[in-house]
Image (cartoon, rainbow, N blue to C red; front, side, top):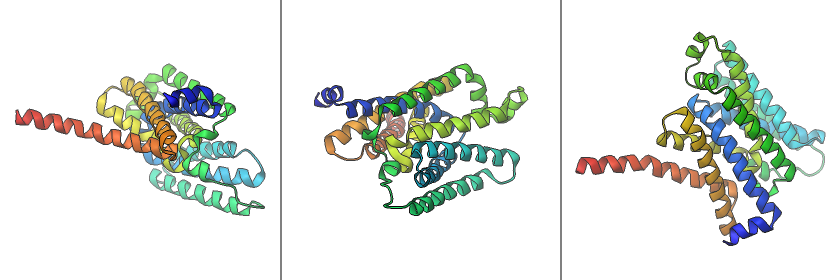
Length: 276
């Protein structure tokens, strides 16, 4: 009870709790698309490439999150363009953008005059640093995500599972691909403060993977993954509060243990049936 009482009492904790909710909804919904379309490696490439935007923003004295957003969106669109145009294999393009973004970020940070900034909050997250403006930004992104999936549910569904079939139905596959890549990039950047660049790929994928073990239809997986991501983030925040360890790492640990348990449950059930 002390934890919930202090959430209501302290602004930084209430901001952290709100960030868990907003980030969980976004990562759960967008992560479902990422997992179903098998773009986990793509999300990792976009996540790490955003570090280049952070480094450049520090060098030019701009907002690091704005730099991360611009770099992530450009990287996502670039990967989509390369893969669609068949100029280079998609996995090669992702690996190139992944390493290039990290290299650019490191170079510009070391070129920045004075002391190098503390990058731990970007690499591993710092949910207690979430501000009111961050929450407003997260709320706008969540609204956009829910609106896109509600208004264009069927086209997104078809593109996620079978782009060839979607094209045969005269759907704008390329436009949807670019739009969803940009949406993945925006979701990634808004979640950096919660779990950090290093662990973010897990928050995007693990809740959706857990949801696919429970539900089979895309429409049911979406809200279930969002609920799992939100509960995992809250659990990570509570563990962080009780044990004084990083919230992002706690969140991913909880989600990973949950996935293991969910994967083992069918095995135990089948063994009992065989024994019976």
